[in-house]
Image (cartoon, rainbow, N blue to C red; front, side):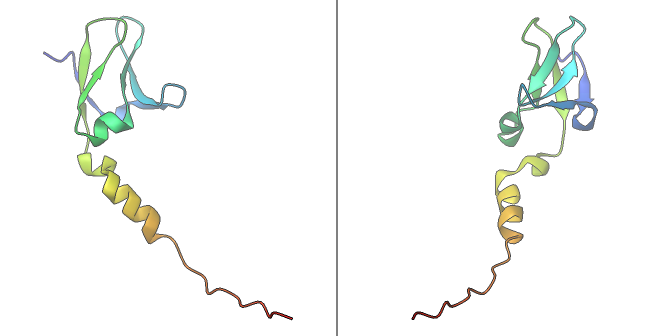
Length: 86
């Protein structure tokens, strides 16, 4: 059974760990990566003890195809200038 249910908004992004983190009662941090969330994982584990939490999040927020589409959708192609050849 999960120690707690935690909203992703209540977790902090840790750049060093490349994970969302949340304080564990043992003094360490529960951790879950963006890749874990993309594949549908919802359990954040503490590396120092046996506790884990269930992360509440919207899977669409971490959908890889959606994020790629946004990046591609924002690209604006400029007309290429023709340089005269002497």
